[in-house]
Image (cartoon, rainbow, N blue to C red; front, side):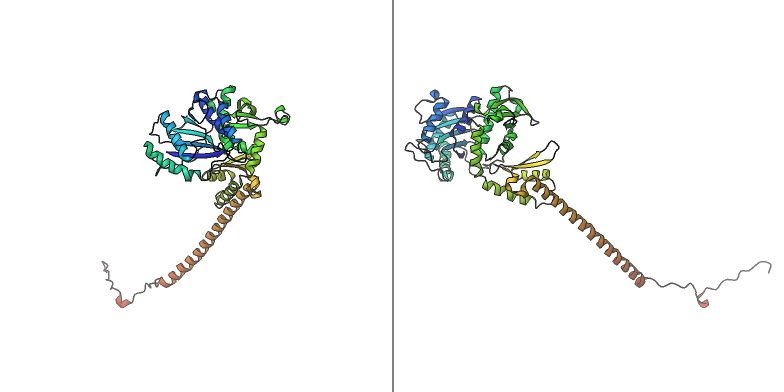
Length: 414
């Protein structure tokens, strides 16, 4: 079993994520602990309000939401009752046994897993410490539970998989309003609360990977003038398709006002990501073969950084944005400094081209000189050898005494 713990400041977003999975038939709420009503009688608002009332007891807590996924080996096929029992045991050992929490069994992955939604504000207003929760309590609990329930052990197994970002397959989306809302909402719940972005273009840099786009409309439009926001599905050519949906129609209400607050908060959280991207870019340009922005984009893929190139209708590059999947951050190149802006990146590519040309010219010049020197030396060697090793001219003169005597020819009649 592998346990993954994530904390957040938005219980509404996490609850929406799981409830939307239930709505489209990809998950099921199998347990609700420490609620005044039975699971079957709990509405969405009942589930949400239980968490919100506890959160109100401690408004100083910046992170009051805990989202846990328990992942099992593909060979294991557990019943709902067993999953609920495992979840209860895990939460008890984690110190959340008296907290209200919901357990969802998900069916949208290649391995059995369940999600647990809870918060860390207790009835007396005190918060449960989340610092190093995974190391302090989750790991010992996981090992005990594997022994107790006879689960496949996670030790020695490769737990981390390479990150992959799968866009929505718009071919499967019904282009009516309801189906589009479900598809967009599942993406928003993933991106809005997991990624750090500080502007609408930065947010769209991630959303577009999922074929979703947030749009304010043109400056003359009523949507723009009223500070409205629309979400659209994009086709394979990145063109809007289907019916745009107002931000106010989603459960999490990701309006422009909501996003502006996220922009402000996220800007202070991206310092580490900026340093990481800067260092990665500098290391990439040590390779003199990076002579174009496209080659740089390919190089950065190895570091789990996606590059978004913003070009004019004439094809001229005017902006560049980096999506760092490792730190889950989106950073505009110009915010890193002049050398990392679109113009700065292009200049670095030109410098690499010039460096390669100089190296090539130097190599040609050196080879030419070597050839000339070699030719001259060989000429000298050949002439010297000719002089030293040349055979003496043989005189064809032979003394009479050494010549064979010629027989006199007798002529008839003499």
